[in-house]
Length: 229
Image (cartoon, rainbow, N blue to C red; front, side, top):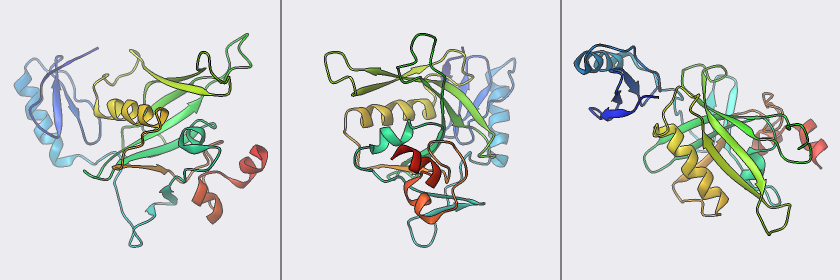
């Protein structure tokens, strides 16, 4: 795993392997013999870089439209909440920092129960959007494990993120840190004023594209909603 050795720009950082990591599209450059060569390539990359998730505010100031996917803020639904919505199944979610207009989009994939633990909630595999294709360009960063909190109601769930050394990202990458910070805020019930949580126009349970206006409002498709209630 590489580590940061020199932050030379607000747009990228240079790794110990003498390659850059772009902080806008999250891509990595090739390894060079010298740091100077890596910086030179990073400076050129800045002129052609496309942010991973272009932030396009619509005129009504409420919804975002990108292709055929309509994004909206997720409602903090009674009895479900943001955490309940995020970990229903296979979810796409964007965390938006309103103060600095920064955002990261994540894909949460529900795993399968391990043998002998069928009664427990399986972990979720977490990926972050790292390219212009918002359906394919995701990079694995780690897992969220769901365990009953000791000495409490067994229905209460603690959500713990574990960064994976198998990830091509680094533990201090902005998108990784952002996920940890937001998850911790939601777990402790201290959602900051600067944070907005958006769904990506896909059902939080099955991941299918949403087209029904009511489904778009809550981020869950009608078939999955019927199964839930």
